Amino acid sequence: MNKTVKIIIYVLISLITVSLVFYLYVRNDIYSPMSKDSNKVVFEIQKGQSSVEIVEALRKEGLARQGWTTAIYLKISGYGNKLKAGTFLLDKANSPVKNIEIIVSGETALKKITILEGWRKQDIAEYLEKKEIISSNDYLDAINKPWDYSFLQDINDLEGFLYPDTYYIKYNADSDTIIKAQLDNFDKKLTQQMRDDIKAQGRTIKDVVILASIIEKEVLKDEDRKIVAGIFLSRIKEGMPLQSDATVNYVTGESKASPTYEETRKSSPYNTYLNKGLTPGPISNPGISSIAAAVYPEYTDYRFYLNRQDTLETIFSVTYDEHLMNKEKYLK
Image 1: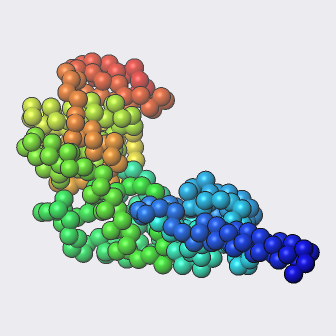
Image 2: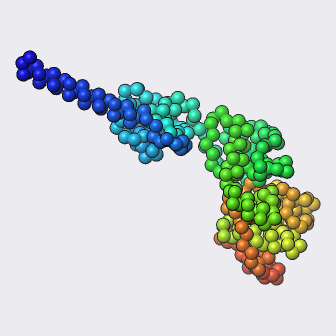
């Protein structure tokens, strides 16, 4: 074997070896799971995004290792032109290839819904129907089904427990799926420590949620919510009515900053101008800030408050006379 042949064989072997090593490296990079543990990631692809931009986004989210290896796979597989715009639930426990296949298949395409704090169940139902996800009646009917959660003991209505948040759901999601996501979220937000503290205070989760639902509709700032929670609990202890305008609005179906005198006289167990104590049930679905305020109130000498409509600031007062002065000053 002459020297030239040996050189050619050596070069070929080297090329084959390098190619094999390169192939194995790329294959391991794109086919190996990113993580041993499941870690769900909501991944959005905007309409018009290029495959290069999508690959870079995958890398930044920890869903791909090397951008260039993923780009090579997209080119060879032909998937580069099949990546679909939408929202997808991917997992770091998947390989980059698996996540790309999920995007291409569109099987776990998600739709974003945002349920606002303070909405009532009827508001949620109407919103979901407007988004063309499910009908309002389907959602309200599903709420009345029995739901097996420890925090729902002795509770017949889910109002107050339909946790407001942003959710990513499948396009074909039904009412049960959405409600379960909301209840699971509530179950997660209400920590064991909070539950223990509620029990230690001699209170119930239902009463806390009722109070939180009123606070949610009454006050905007977190620090003010704790003070208002203390005011309400002090009023109950001292035998004073809560006199919450939000409860009157619940009765009338209005959204007034200051209900009329006639409206405050409207007969209903939910009217806290006429009835002492908490309402029979929640008047809205509160977020964690209001729930935390209801669990951990700040007690002060204040017994009255009002919300300025120009600055949305909460003005507190100790006496009724002081409260009337504040009304004259800030609400005129």
